[in-house]
Length: 328
Image (cartoon, helix red, strand yellow):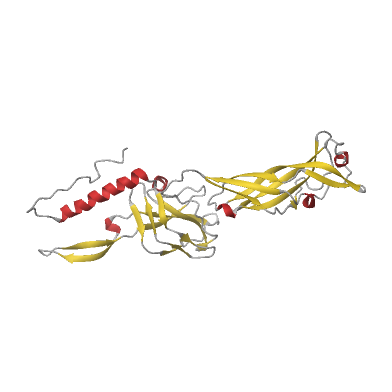
């Protein structure tokens, strides 16, 4: 359905000398300007937070602090909070299974009847009425089902009629962990996904052996598996709100010299890199290290099942992990 419908008060007011003005005439002027502004917001912006509405809360807190802010809902209504609000977390012990109960905090545009009357005045003929209302949005904690869907107001949340500011988990009437801001929607849609990249310099490797011990068997052929290493890769510099899609690479030389009797011999080492346990703050890079034969004579010593594998943690100290994350 078109957002321009008969319910909108889009009429131009005209006046003439000597006309008697009523309250409805002045309110019609305000209604016309308001409806045109809402049409502008609805046409050129998506529902979401325009500025502010910061939410803070840490594990163990019994309340969250919401900062002043400005937002727009799916009808173009401006949602305004002029000063910070402190909201208590829902007083629940947990969900029915004994786990923390998850909630989202929503904010929505108030109707006139929901607002506090700041000033009332006396009129002619024993009339009296409010002339100013305090602009104040409506906050609501909405419980989430185990699958993460809202237990109520689902259509309003999906459409943007009610805007999500944060998600929390509550156990014993307090935050079970730090709150999450990944569910927030921006009123200014990004022109492209959020992309960030970096290099873990230096990369601190640890030995990794998913097969349960050092390599005892060997592959006869083009290459041989000689071991594994892993490293924790921080990505906090990317400032991701949600877990992005990570892409990673190994930087560094592939030519190494390993001890061989009284001297050393050159081998080619490369790795198969996997990204595991990704979060907004980082991931684990796991690398299966392969040895390839050099043109000068192969890697028979490495392929020999009885040979001692090289100390990969020391040998690969020059390898670094470069990464890129794509969010959105």
